[in-house]
Image (tube, rainbow, N blue to C red):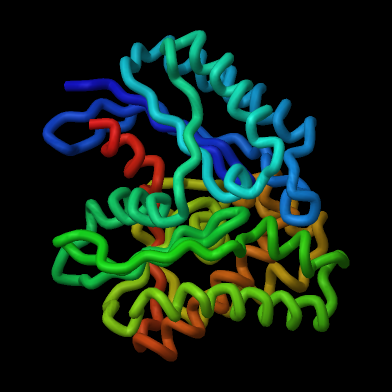
Length: 313
């Protein structure tokens, strides 16, 4: 048995999984998430804000302590959309070398391509699903990018990463609180255009099942379930009809920031961007229904973090 640590640093959040790995299966030891908003302003300015790097440092130092305390012997940290786009990304890498290297010598973050991000997400997402439900289209809806992956029990057949996510779409289009009808229409058009690039590359019409992963998807599921507080066990592998997804989307977009903040299952760091994420998810649902006849979303708590942990082996 090997104890491994996986860190996923995205545009909006940084997450940690420490797990015991044996015979290709993972048993969670620690699973944590912090909202660091590393991608703050990257879409507009092309650079990391100093305060965003500092927020990430604080979270990573906390994670480094957990890795040390749990005795994980191997670590892999990946950075995704925002880091691919930032001109001053070396400032970020220098920070990760300092913090992680103090726990495991030589450890640092690595930038992965959108294609690898998609494949890692797929590996983490479908492990518990019945292979007879495949082929699967797995959607990893992040802060700066969205990955579509088509595959089945034999592996990944097609994947594409497009630069649209909850943070990018919110910063680009949703400027009022709540957003105006024109802003929502513009956001849907932007999302449809960017997602169209993915649909052109990934033949989703072959898919039978839609699986959504990452924080936006799990948050939308928790809102849909009307949970009194966030419960990962109830969210994991829960199902949401396309009609219900439309309802959740409309409800969130018609609320102010303060009204969304009162919904206890929405993490405070997602309150201002969940509307943008809901638009991306809703546009995805419409297109998957049209192209593949899929009218239901399955939400998985297992995602790229699990894929990263498995890749260490």
